Image (cartoon, rainbow, N blue to C red; front, side, top):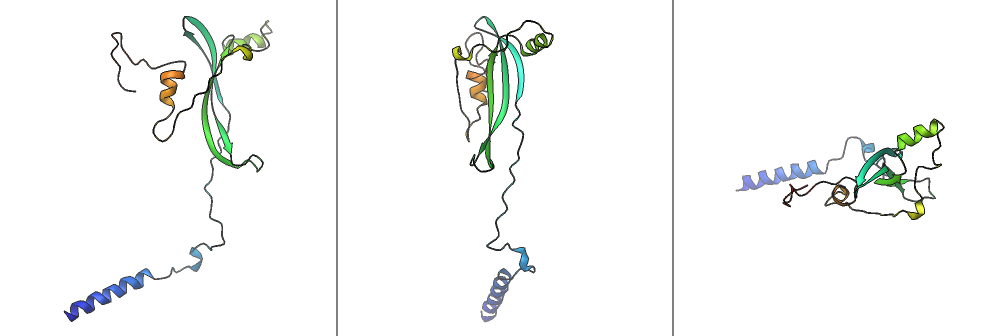
Length: 163
């Protein structure tokens, strides 16, 4: 019994001694006064991707511009614009004619309106937001507010497969 107790005691001392050992290099631990390194914020350009489309909505042919991009949210606008987060957006804007056709006609010197956009004072404006830990905003976009929607039911009214 005494031999067993002595063996356990010596093994415990070895374990405690190993836990309390100092690192070989005293400079390997950062000093308390040193600032912790901050993770780098990947700064992607805020340049948007713009494409032009034509769709039939309610029997009416509508030309529109689709813009997808990001907006950089900053911690303090007065401070060198330290980035805090990026927010993705998709915007749709009605056009008078397809964008590439408008630009080609304008470059050719044809008589085209000064702007390819209808009067902004008379158009509706809608903001929608969704997304978060549980679901992304793709279902709101594809199911409700986007110009092209996923068909959820067949001809007999039976629901389609889950999105």
